[in-house]
Image (cartoon, rainbow, N blue to C red; front, side):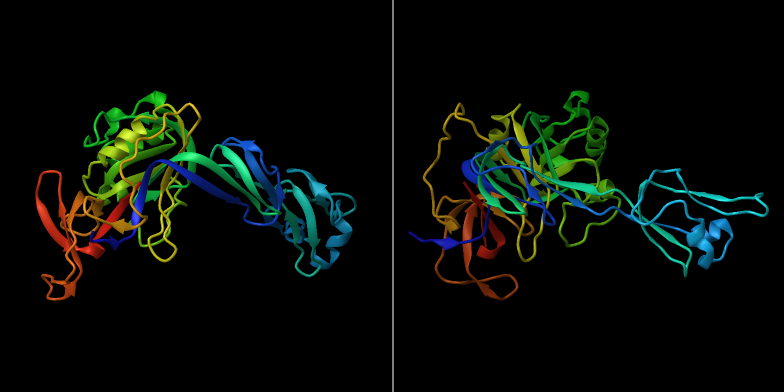
Length: 375
C-alpha cells in the first residue's frame, strides 16, 4: 500500500500524557515520587527578589549627600514599613525639621553618601509551579520541578492565545458548525472552558471576559476578530503571554471553519469534567501547539479506536487537514497517493496526493499542504 509521512495534530480519546513542570529558577520541589496530585496543586516553589525602589532622601531633606548618614533613622538591612519615617533633618535650633517616609515596605539595601539615595528592596515574591494536570509524579527534578503523568484525552489546536488555565468543560454550541457569539455566553460559565463550534466572534470573547470564562475552544477565528480582541496585529511569534483574561484555542484554522466533528463529539462527551488548557503556540523551530487535556479516570469507558496507523503515516483513508488556500482548514480523506511528482500550477514539480471532501469533491494538492490528524 502507498504510504507517506507528514506532520500532524493529535486528537486522541486516550493517550499517555506527561507534563514537565519546571520553576524559572532554582527552588524547592514540594512533591515526592509517586505522589498523586491535582491540577491546581503546587509542585514547586521558589522566591525571587522584589523590586528596588530608589528614594532620593538627601534631596527630600534639602541636605548635602555627605550629611545623609547622620540623619538616617534606619540602617542597612533593616526592614521598613510603608509610611515609616526613615530620615529626619536637624532643622535650625530644633525648628523646621523635615522627615522622609518610606514609599513602600521593604528592606534597606544600600545608602549612597555620593548621590544621597537610599535603595529599598521590596519583599521577596513567591513563584509557584502547579501540577497543571491531575496525575502521578513520575520523576523529580531536584531544585527544578517534577514530571506529572496521566492517562488523558488530548486535543491539539492549530492556534491559540493566553497561557495555562483550568476549568470544567461547558458546551456553548449545539453543533460543530455553529458560530460562537455573545448570546451563547452565560453568567454561570464563570471559570469554565467553553466549547463552541465554528468561528469565535470578538463580541463573544468580550462577553466571556465579562463572565469570567477561563477559556474558549472553537473551530476558527477571523483575523479581524483577533485584532479586535488583542488591540493589535499579532505577528509571527510565540503566543501564550497575552493578558486578556482568558485563553483561546482554535482547533481548525482562520476563518469561519467548523470544528471537526470528532473533536466536537470528544469534548462534548466529557462535558462537566475539568480540563487543562494552554493557548501557547509557536509555529517556527521547536513547534508548540495549543492543547486541551482531560485526565481520564478508571470509570471512563474505553475509547473505540479504528485501525491505528503508524505515527505520521499517510495512507489511503487517512484523515488530514489542508493547510493552504484555497482550502485552508478543511478536513478531508486521502484517496490516492501517486508515486510520481506532478506539475503544479506554478510550473514546479512536487509530490501530491488526492483527497476527498465530505461533500464528495476530490482535489489534488501537494503533500506539503496537508497536516495529519493523529489519533
